[in-house]
Image (cartoon, rainbow, N blue to C red; front, side, top):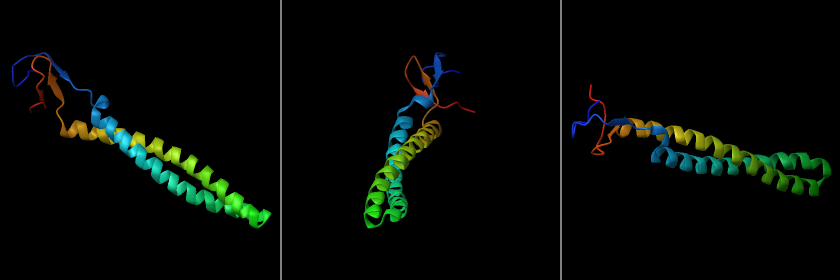
Length: 116
């Protein structure tokens, strides 16, 4: 492999797993997943908690719905954040690998793709 700009053979293949887009994708989708999971989890937790609380009467419905909201929001929110982070990192790596250059010259810092 030779740099097309300066002709140096001191060229490295860039590690796309450790690039900025990878990290940004992880943070963005992690936030989106946590938010969506929290909202969805709170809603389903509230309805499940209220249904379980009906056994104890009207106060049980209120307490069950309140506790279900918090449990659902926390449980599903964490899961959504973890999954969003994982998929975001992969998406960022794919974009970085396919849009940005694969090789970098250590001599002149020029980035380029392999010519075929």
